[in-house]
Image (cartoon, rainbow, N blue to C red):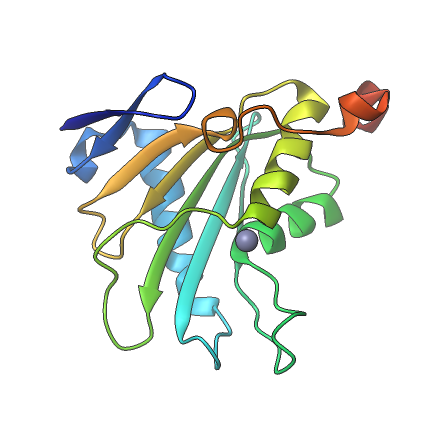
Length: 170
Ligand SMILES: [Zn+2]
């Protein structure tokens, strides 16, 4: 196992072995891997599966859905967050992301785009949870674990706008 420092100076783990994950982390990574099968990616051919775990232990998957106009494309992470919200679920604890090319596995884990980081950061402020992020390559041989605050230090969210976030807890 390699240890590296995130931007915030915290030790973040870059795990080579899926076997080192906790049972809950494995379950979430597996759900994200399964979600890559539902990706609609006719343009990039890059399949992304995400899975959210709530504090109550619910798992909500999502996959990327691309548009021919490109700009309307929705990432897997946001698809999962929106679907969770459709079921009045906002207490996110952890999110896993797994990627694959349509015709081959990915070698490296991928990180959420800026838009998804913002949405995860917003969600993190609703319950005051530093949401865990696990991202894996296709074969689950390279897994990176961090938190939203690692990936988006000094973020801006609803609390900064003076929103009474407790009102939006489900
Ligand atoms: Zn994204």
